[in-house]
Length: 59
Image (cartoon, helix red, strand yellow):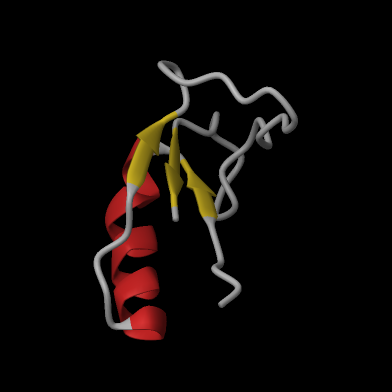
């Protein structure tokens, strides 16, 4: 199963959670991008919904 992720700012976390639940009928994992490093992936720097800095990964 391919999962979709949302990279969002603090203002759009609720939107991303609602969208994920609507799509997958399951609760997402929420990752704080300030506290997590990825070895093979650099997350986008901007929210997918606005121009603010991305803070969370909802997947």
